[in-house]
Each structure stands twice: as C-alpha cells, then as structure tokens.
Length: 335
Image 1: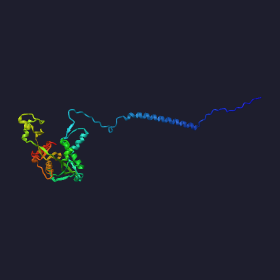
Image 2: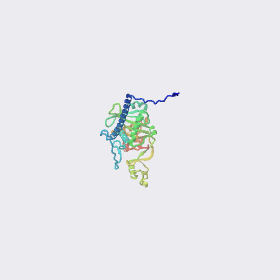
Image 3: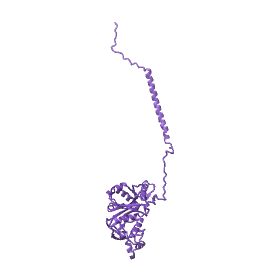
Image 4: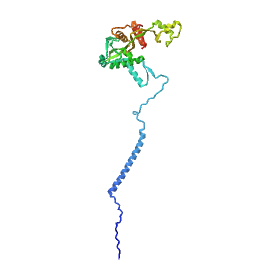
C-alpha cells in the first residue's frame, strides 16, 4: 500500500527582485549627473573666490587711495602760536584750539550781534537806552544801552558769551555771581553793515558797586619806588629813606603802576572794559565810562577827577584809558 504524504505548510518563496523600468533608470542617471554638476560648480566657485582674493588686495586706483599725512617733529620751535589780531595763544594743529581761536578772533575784531530777538526781551530784562545818535570819530552813529549784569534769558546768554570773549582777551578770571549781582552792563551798539535789522556790540563796560579803593601814586613817587623795588615788587634796599617807598603796593611794576595802601571810600568800580579791535581809538571807551559814571547811581553822577571811580588791575591798554579819562585820579581796587 502506497503511503501518500501531504504537505501541510507552504514553501517560502524568495521575493523576486523587481526590475526597474527604463524611465526609473533614466531619472537616476539624471540625478547623478546633476549632483556631479553641482559639485563641479561649487568647486569652481571655491577656486574662483580663492583666485579673486589676492586681486582684492591689489593697489587701488589713484582716485580711491586714502590721503596720508606725514607728521614731523620740530623740536626747535614751539607749537604755541600767539595771534597778532586777538592776542590769544593756541596750539597750532589742535582742532579744538584752532576752532576756539577762529570764533574768539572773529568776536574780538568784529564784535557780537544784537538783533530783534534781544530787542523783544529788552523790556523783560530791564534794558534801558542811556543815549542814542552818538557819533564816533569815523562818522558812525551808535547808542548805549544798560541792564543788570545778572540778567537771565536770551540777553543773559548773550552777555555770558560776551564776557567769556572779554575774559579770554584780557586773560582775566570770570566774574563771580556776587560781583554780577552788584553790577550793570553798558553796551555800545552800532548798525550792522550786513543787516539793517541788526546791530553790532563793539564796546562793553561792567560797572560794579564797591566800597573802597586805593589811590594811585604820583609819577614822582612812582619813579623813586620803581628805582628801589625789584621786578617782583620786593624792596632791594632796607635803609630808612626807602621805607616809605616800600609801603607802596605794586600793581604793575613793568608799567610803573603803584598805589598807596590806604583804603579810601569809592562807590564805583570798573572790573571789565573792552572795545573790539576794529573799533578802537574812536572814543567808544570814553563814552561808555562817562555813561557808567553818570547813571550807575540814579540821581548821583560820579566824578572820576574826585576819585569816585576805580579800576581793577588794568592791562596796558586799560592803563592808558584810565590815565587819559581820569587824569591820574582814578583809583585801583582788588576784584
């Protein structure tokens, strides 16, 4: 009897590999070609940029080159310069110093402007016109105004800039708030040649209320004192004959200005006097001083010939004005 064996499980058949169609093979070939092209392009770009890098460092055209400045050290001469027009010493080549000199020199020569803006604030600032139609030696007519020296606002800023210029020109320290509180400012204004609605500030006097001052020694006493005193004002001879000379106060030994040490009652002091360089020798300083002496104390004009007016330590130009205006009777006080 023949036994028939039946299989109860199915035989596992290996999956038959699927054959790719021609279109699939073509797409794969294109992808490979595209990848190869991209790699080639990136490689070319890298080599191109590397090749161009040295070209960027090549010398620029003459129009694109930066201008270089050669500096030289000159040890034989000083870098400080003194302007012959305004007298200010500044460092040549320093931008800040040269800018300061340009603005200061312009103010010293031409003066500052007084315009409509200041006129609108005149009533609030207490500005008073002392006199008008004042004809100076060159034929120009001007006017003198007066207001408190501690004024605020636009006019206060204008006066502060003017005093800064004056202090630089005279090599003087700034006036303190207490001094400005007891002072009046007198300005000499002339029409501006460039603008009919504006004026130029060509002169300024600050008048201060003081209490005492020293009388200036006569020329005879000054000559003897200058002979027996050194350049620093100290006595070189201690003999009894020179003791009275040693008691004098040396204000300016170089110009021979000495004062008696006794403090005398004096109501008016002039701490600042200034006239722009292009308007000097026109009588402006004398007009300003006369206005200050006549109007500083209301209803009580002061006479410089009676020793009622005093100056602080004057410069060479201020000393000449003081002597010509007061005939030697103007006194000296310490600011």
